[in-house]
Image 1: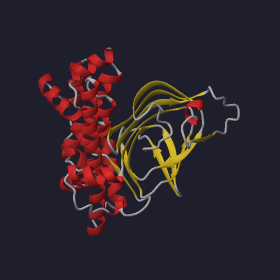
Image 2 (image 1 turned 120 degrees about the vertical axis):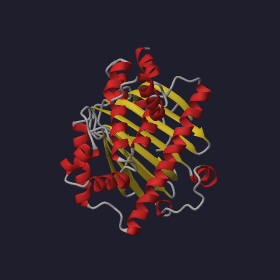
Image 3 (image 1 turned 45 degrees about the vertical axis):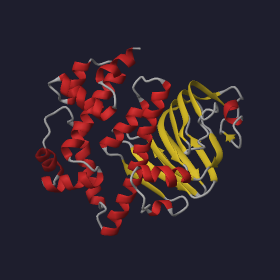
Image 4 (image 1 turned 180 degrees about the vertical axis):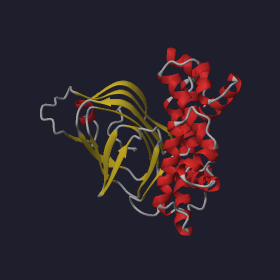
Length: 340
């Protein structure tokens, strides 16, 4: 969030890969720190890894953290008014804003959950770490001025239809569809640009994620109004279908096979995916395979040919085109960046 206390204090356009100590937190204005570990010193490291915090445009902020938490701690500060779009990938953190509590936990299946939180005015913000864990998350924050005069107009929304923006601490939680997952992945692994071009690259994806957040909140409201929200049984069936896809990702999968194993008709299965994921079953499977190819290229040192086979592409050129469309970088460029 735009006053997240684990952001480094090097100014509005900073990038750091290193350590954040107890001292670094306490040097930030209006931040207090507490821990159940009584022997912490000012020089003890609380977080070690990669941090990015920048104001992409006046009123539009990006905060990224990919770090190891070394100790249990609770940081308290003030959250400014605006919209916070939180995307949590790994780890487990509890937040309290005012009198509302929010729990964040990475999905072991690789799905990414988005949470939108609206602050109508400044309020108390508390971040509670569980200690000794890897935390990876992204926050896009937008001020009311940016939303009013730039953001909503830029994304073609001049009606401000959602109740999300009318109530203090209103929130919306949803599972990101594949195209939004790719935006998050692109921010974590951007193409190697000059600093000026990288800012434009990140700003474009941040604006798209704000648009995705607003659209998801509006769609949820429309489903509530029309009775189109998924029932508990439908959510269980959807989860069963997703688990089957993940378990058999490298196998031949057809919509008929998934539907039969889930206990649904093919049209019923497609309906659930379009309501919940905003894409067809085929598109969901394709995006999941491409994401797996991204992971083995980035984390396991696989060759481009191996990644293409993992994603189910026989022709590397077709794989490269689909990969760049989803992640904004070619497989070869990602592989080269990893070796460097």
